[in-house]
Amino acid sequence: MTKLLYSTLTAIALSVGISSAAPGDKHPNVIVIMADDLGYGDLSCYGAHSFETPHIDQLAAEGIRFTSGYCSASTCTPTRYSFLTGNYAFRFPNTGIAPPNGPAIIKDEVTTLPDLLKKGGYQTAVIGKWHLGLGGPGGPDWNGELRPGPAEIGFDYHYLLPTTNDRVPQVYVENSRVLNLDPADPLWVGNKKPSEDHPTGITHRDTLKMDWTHGHNSTIHNGISRIGFYTGGHAARFRDEDLADEWVKQSKKWIADHKDNPFFLFFASHDIHVPRIPHERFMGATDLGYRGDCIIQLDWCVGEIMKTLDEQGIAEDTLIVFCSDNGPVMDDGYADHALEKLGDHRAGGPFTGGKYSIYEGGTRTPFITRWKGKIAPGQVSDEVVCTIDLAHSLANYIGVDLPEGVALDSHDVMGALIGEKDAKGREHLVQQGNRADNLSLRVGDWKLLHHSKGTARNVVVEQLLASPKVPKYQLIDLANDPKEEKNVIDQHPEKAEELKKMLTEIVESGRSR
Ligand code: NG6
Ligand code: CA
Image (cartoon, rainbow, N blue to C red):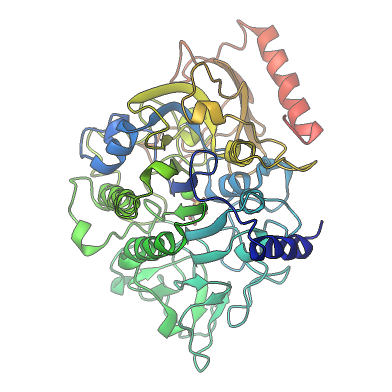
């Protein structure tokens, strides 16, 4: 059935009163709060002791804190791709970190998580960071309609930062248009310097309020130079300091307006991605510099969302899933002194590796579920769950069948997500770096790491980004070696072969369920 026909039928169904039920046991509201670059050890409920994250700690205390909760990749775009489609990103071209002028990555015809929820009568919104491209093959038409985009893949409403905030442009996109764009001052975005005298992070370095360390030295906005160039669109530009406040404000409004029918809100925070520029009221909230302060800002956002649910009387009708899009990194291109001010804080918790890495720290991240009145509070779960599983899990739960060929790597782990007795998580999980060249496979407590070129990245988060040489294949026994320090491939050649075969099968068969 085409999307158009389906939405027409839905509209008819709604108009004749077969509308979806109110939110409740079988159709909870769902809010996915995805943090950006937040590591396993970056919250006090996950062992951080250099600062407190009271709101997220409360969320965990009222629900389930997962110790083997994952995102599917150790960078943003592939994790988000997999989260929304239920498919491993490494299967598809152009799903690595998206550039400023990148076209929409998820094709209109793909049935996505929000599509599935809409079939179940949900209203859907994404507020926050997008980073999945906008527009057709030529890229975004910044001064016109930014289609295809979120509206074409199942979101009824969007209020977004187009890529990441270290990439241009600093504007909001609301419902397929740049918000507050003055046609007399068109927005131009490109990857070449638009004129000889265009100020950049190189020519005007002494004017910057935060210096760059690598990359990030093109167009300057708000005293910060970025990846890519842009001109115009001045009335539409925002201040980095205001992003979190704006998204909380828009989320509160959207929740209040949609609380009478089941809703799905994807709250895609920019915290704690670079440039880490918290609101002034959070500057200095920790001794760790802006990286720490942005964690406090993120915690505040979570608190505001929880408060909104209480105020609207819908906390018991709402499943909150808190997660991250990849592990931690210290210097990701700006001199915000994250490393110098780290002290004994360990952003990756007990794990090795962070962002860009297929060691555990790259993808094993905070993962919390809360559904008041449904999930028994105060649980800690060791079941393996992943952001890629939400599509299948939620669709099944609300009674929407997955069409053939949809969400082929998404496993139904809903029982584990809501803490049902004896419910199991995944039996196996593939983790990827930014692209397909580095993949690992976890099966139970065994893990195979495959660095196809023999180079790893960001292995030691507390050092500057490096690309050390590693064996192409490593076998790890996570039960006895959660830090992944001992490659036991020579001791267990049969196990290694079994996992290699399984990884090849998963890659080649195009599906893993
Ligand atoms: C890298 C950027 C990094 C960050 C990352 C994407 C440089 C030198 N590094 O290319 O700063 O933007 O891409 O991060 O430009 S992510 O969390 O959105 O995947
Ligand atoms: Ca990220």
